[in-house]
Image (cartoon, rainbow, N blue to C red; front, side, top):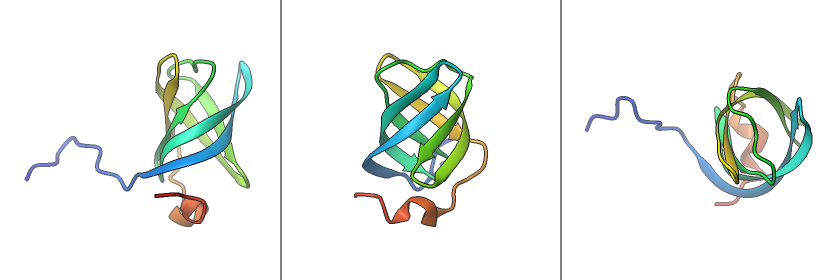
Amino acid sequence: MDVSGSRKVDRRHVLLKATILAAEGEQEVRIKDLSSSGAQIACASPLRTDRDVIFKRGAIFAAARVAWSDSECAGLEFYRQLEPMAFGSDRTA
């Protein structure tokens, strides 16, 4: 089976809240999917694509790039991978 080019990452479907800090301001979001390299979030206000943001969840602060965005959701790519332990105890399956 050829998986080249696929995004095969250990992703967790979660229902957690986080805060996004962007140049436009701060916004509370809902995390839909979370992995060590990024997150898919649901947000009330669209985020600008190819912009840097700070993802904040509890004691976790992660610099990220907005990889894609639409009117309801956005995909974040973390600049540094999160340790699995950083979000492992808060996840829901």
